[in-house]
Image 1 (tube, protein in one colour):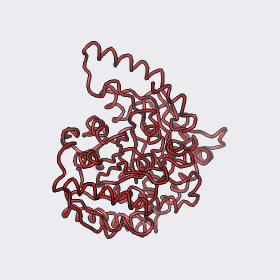
Image 2: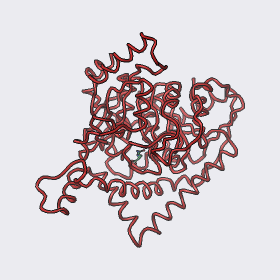
Image 3: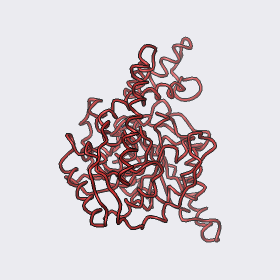
Image 4: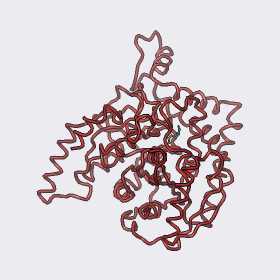
Length: 445
Ligand code: GLN
């Protein structure tokens, strides 16, 4: 059913880079047999999923949206992929994304932009735009994304689905192609908080292959979905309701907050005073880490190699010049600059100090309230081609990026429409508060 739908519709959307139909049908048959034979099955046995093309999948192309890896067949599975497969899910394929997860509109993909299923003139958001569009269009019930500065929550908002970025360290990063290692985190994108909870039950937990994953028990995220919300303390960060926020988005968010009040929650204003430093700090730290992570793409070990190099330096230079797109090159240049001698303290060290202040803002707020609510993005999905200037694109992430710098979890929940395009309500919690976020998101009506 889903494969036929992909075949029929995805020519318009471009949400998949690779469809693994044959493998999927084999797995479906095996799942059917297991169910019929009373084998070892669980709630996710036989459920089709899609994986952002940043997750290494054994024997399947893993391009990360880049020409650099257009020829890369991963020799192993990411831990997330391994766990989802062990739980009986079936991967239908790999979804489109901004190259190396750098972008907010999916227009930076080597494989072409993805269209928003609600309005084909609009972007689906990014960088997990393919996963969001595929779920929104009903091409797959759920998909995996990654979020370094908003890449799960913003496309979920633009496509009218639910997307959860877990606490840094909650989900293993092993086998996820690294963009900015201190910020990257994998998470579920689905039609409901309940579906996200089922996926979190599978993917969360410690992994000996990722030393930044945290050894801490994993609750059953579905168990608390219906816990009553009376007495829940909601904070509205005043910095998230200022200039630049579209009035229709503000209205949708305030309406949602009112609905939560009617369920017994109390609301108060809080302040995250360093909010306006989040984008500058991110665009020092993330490119710095990216410039280091992406040095492994040298045309020697894997990925694109230029034709007939005259010597080793020529091989490096031309392979990278040909393999990387504009935005990736821009960030490698920024990162190399900020890490270079003479600039390191002025940029990188300073940005790390700012990062700590941003984290402290959240910790202070969570002394007073249980969760924070605000918009996931300043506007509904914008038109394809509308944001040509990189800085205007970077400013899209004003409400999502600080969350990654602080390492806390966040979820985007569909909260209405404006002009036929969806709006996302963002809910934030303190470290490891995923169960609470899913509970609150599940009660949205
Ligand atoms: N839009 C942000 C960027 O371009 C965040 C991307 C992400 O979360 N991967 O870096």
